[in-house]
Each structure stands twice: as C-alpha cells, then as structure tokens.
Image (tube, rainbow, N blue to C red; front, side):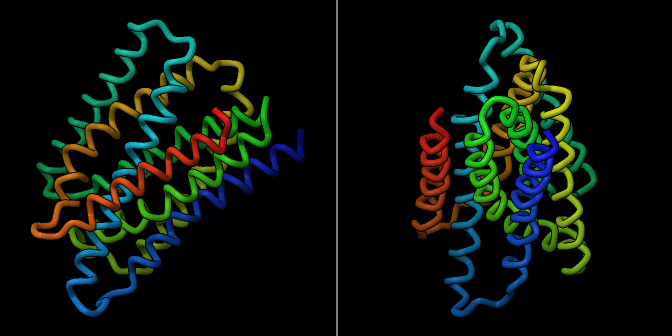
Amino acid sequence: MMNEVVKIVVLTLIAGLAMPLGATLAAVERIRPFWLENELRHAVIAFGGGALLAAVALVLVPEGMHGLPPWAVVASFVSGSLLFMLLDMRLAANDTQLSQLVAMLSDFVPEALALGAAFTFSESAGLLMAGIIALQNMPEGFNAYREIMASTDYRRLPIIGAFVLMALLGPIAGLTGYAFLAEYPRVISCIMLFAAGGILYIIFQDIAPQARLKSHWAPPLGASAGFLLGVVGKMLTGA
C-alpha cells in the first residue's frame, strides 16, 4: 500500500508540475517575427481548448456516466455549467479574466481524483492517465500564464510560483481518490460530470473565441491536435 501511495504522490505531482512548466515556456517573450508569436499563441490556446474538449468527451463524461441514473447525470452536468457561468459573471463584473486558469484546475483536480481511485484496481491505467494529464496541463499552463499576465499586474516569478503550489493539488486529490473515494465511484462520477459541465461552458464562452485569428488557419489545427491527443491517450489507457 505504501508503495502505491508513493507512486500516486509522485505521478500526480509530476503531472501537476507540467502547469508551471507550461507557464515557464509562456514567459519567453517577443518571439520573432511577430506574426509567428501571434500565430503560436492562438494555436496553443486552441490546442488547450482541444485537449479540454477531449477530456470532457473521452474521460470526464464517459467515466462519469458509469453507474449513475440519468437524473444524476443531468443534475451534475447542469450544476457544473451553471456554477461556472455564475463564476464567469462574477469575474467579468470585477474585470478579471481567469477562464484558462479555472478550466485548467477544473480539469486537473477531478482527473487526479480518478487517477488515485484507478490505482486501487489498475496501476497501468494510473500510469498512463498521469502521462495524459501532464500533456494536457502543459498547454493549459501556457495559456493560463499568458491570460494572467495580460489581465493583472503580477510578475513572472510569483505567477510561476503559484502554479508550482497548484501542482500540490494533484497529490492531495490523488490521495483523496485513493484513500476515500475508491469505494464511492458514484461520488467521483458526479465530480467528473460537474467538472465536465463547467469546462464545456468555459470552452465555448471564453477559450474558443480567444483562439480565433482572422485570416490565419493554424489555430483550428491546434484544436484538432489537442483533441487527437485525448483520443490517443484514451486508446493507450485501454478504456
């Protein structure tokens, strides 16, 4: 058991540290020529949106639907969408843009919970899931950093440091899933569906509009690549 606990802590921490790694890459300013920087930024936003959509379509919703009656699926999903809408309205009222950050954490925490629970019956599935979460977190960390820099006065190091602290949510969620929620799969299912509803709202309200770039066609390919990442990850988990 102790060996599994150590693995969960290490794997979820590594997956979480992909967020500050993405933020560190985003801190590289003034890529030349300017059109390349602009195209790259929008492509990464689209890639992150595609990865989030893949998480919803291939992980959160399919896994969340298991063992739940239709009314519970609807209630969990709708409540997530509504709560995230209210949060978005509150942030807009305060003129604060944190949609990328909210989406990143909403994806990371429930998947880390599921990873911890998965270790109780399949170590290989947990290992692959950790790799997929890390690959999703890197572009999401990139986008969240750029969003925070554009909408606040925080400096680079405090933001990256905060992302490092956020990575600790991975081990906390993973151990919670392993120790307390493995015997309550319906609770994990509701959490995953709640997150799916909120993430889907954020994708179409905030992320997709930011990804579009007039007279440029690379960003939509980024969205396709992000979704393909999720497809390949789903196949590798054997689910």
